[in-house]
Length: 442
Image (cartoon, rainbow, N blue to C red; front, side):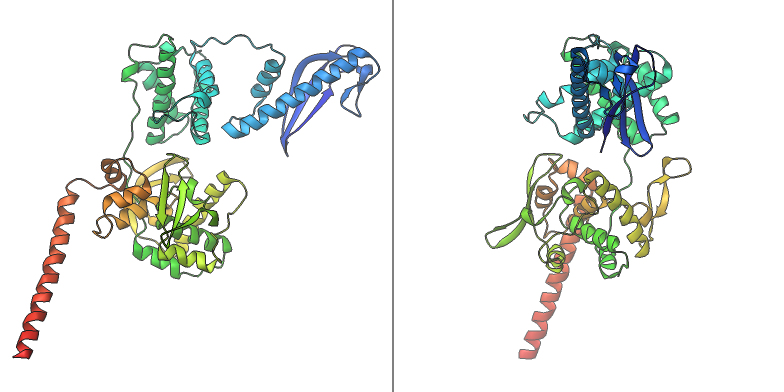
């Protein structure tokens, strides 16, 4: 837990009062408050002015109010993913004492901060007021990246500077300095454009090239676990309890088709009975869509094994749960010898970059393989029409669904050919049986 204390570093009659913020072992930030006091009027025991005159009492009250304000800002930072640094502390001290100059929203960073501050009041394209915490974190990340870039070039960026040249220079920085993958760069460009378009709507001058400032997506290979590989994982005995838990979550994920943010929050309260059938009912965090997922026999088997409960989580922090789940998935798939060599993108610890190539599948496994495996494994089976699968994955269009699993429209022809081939084989068998029966009757 963060702690705040005040101290003096001088024995003068007009010593500056410092605020020391401790965020954990070895992580301490110290900044001037802009307030002063004589050394003899300071109590080192309480870390506050001595209560021997009205001025000192007023100063004590000011320091207590500052402490309360900084604690509140810390809570907000934890929610939105803001990095707490020395500059952050100085800014908030100044903000509390109203020393902050009026912002000039013509500048990219300042408008970015304004944009984030007002995200809770934005109405989305779907008519929803406010955005999710994950969306707030995404924009917080890109503004932090822009701050780093601005410090790197030593120049303040105006909104109207965001043009084709800026796009190229920013991409170069992201690639060569930040070592970001192409997909991440493309996604960040989209966020930058969204901020600038919002500024344009607010009447702020933007570049005439803004419409050409586009992000992009590089299609990555689709990595899934087949039913056969899932069966191998089911039969494997793991000595590590965390691997057992991760395996159970993986199986549930591959038969419910949900993102990890929804998967790992499932619990028995999500189960509803409708017309004698049991469903997992939840509102997806990312889309806000309500989905009803019939409980597959594989999921029921895990619930029965755990007395009707879902597997436990690894920790109380959801972000840490996601990270641990990803780590354990790679480990348990390696132990289960999921070694098929496939194309994919893997993180190289030496270069600290994601690289494309061919890898053993266990190196490419991550939490998202649950949702993609569900969609891919059940697609093409006429017992599972695509609209039914889309109802569970919550894809808005069939085109989005097919793109997600890496299928092309031509696959429809193949799918129909396979169905007709099965029909023809069944009819042939039925005809043969009929002939044999007739012959025996004669």
